[in-house]
Image (tube, rainbow, N blue to C red; front, side, top):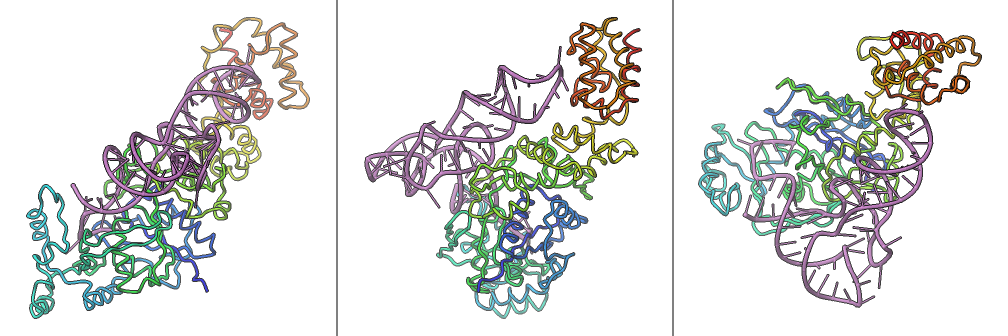
Length: 508
RNA sequence: GGCCCGUUCGUCUAAGGGUUAGGACACCACCCUUUCACGGUGGUGAUACGAGUUCGAAUCUCGUACGGGCUACCA
């Protein structure tokens, strides 16, 4: 009777959702789907000070865009709600009380000033950042040092207090991480973490354990930055609910920027996006461009994230979401941190655009083309265009530059590319070619090319020398798909019009 | 400083005692194409260092170095 797999992603709504966050979501999601389990989204908004309006909705939107929607969440609902920790506030106190009753936690009345003084007084060469731990707790103002009667009085007077865990002194806490294997900590070196804050809100440490228990979470995946505080959580599980209910842990390697952990703060400065979608910070007014707006396909985004630290053991690199669900295994996640490589990320996107069918790209491409004002675009025509240029687009945004000339005549022409070699003979060629085009039967790439080459041979001009001028006439510059294919899509009337239009410049 | 985690081409990684250490991105060359890409072929390029265990170590052990994370009434 194996328990039903239940996993959760528990972000705090403080800003944009970065690469590492989405990858954590992805691994949770894949693991849940693979094992027929549930994926829950829980909002960890216990810090009023860092709360940012709109961030929660933004996270939902990111998950929706990425196609990683949870089964249970504040908006989807579910049997274990509420899914916002701020709305669960009253739940946590009883667990903190139980810890106190059992001697695993205590009240601490120290003011911020007193804490600061402690850190200052105990600071020295060998201990640059003193902690509130077994070595100092007996020198502080808490229920361990203050007589019971007095503690009672302080509580009755509503003196501000926090509840701290009382870390055992000479114990070893160990657990097996699904990615790293056995990890152990000496409890003497971890501090007496605050579990319940003065405002009555739990800290992450208490909340994560209580909620994982209440929500029947079976597997807990989170970033490696949590590894150091794992002993606190393990102990809390032992004191409160027993190891038999504890989820299996997996601490995911970090995704690194050029120097260290990818930070939410310095998004723009790397030269590539770090957020899934553009984040507009209401506090600073700062706008940080996301992968979606940069022109990434959600399928590609997920694919590249999955492969950042995981592979299926074969040489396959392009995976659909369905394939990922089928092949994913947490044990194959690499344990080392991965530096993010934007070039490779773009390659994934390029591969996905190339493999996407025309239909599925229509919506996005239409959006790109309407960048500078809405355009009436014929559906069938759009399909032809996409088929013609998609292989040369790395980002969705490339569709504009690669194909806008098919919708409106070029704004400028690279005449310098042809003028030096222009001649009366060439001018005559194009004049005759126009006449032939007028009467051509079967307007397609092959016919256009055949006629072009026949005429060139007739006039004794190398066809190659005429192709560049032709390209400039149709495209405006030295880029784009094959000229004859372009002419085919452009159609007879427009092709002739463009040849004649630029013809005038060249003959003058 | 302390604790924890990590370390294979520039980057992401494969290889879980025996391989000419494989692939991908990027880079370079050639081919294709008289545009630019795509594509094709080939190339440069790595087991951090030092000990040990072993017939044999990228792989196991220890030490060193380096990198990262944590060290808040933030998550």
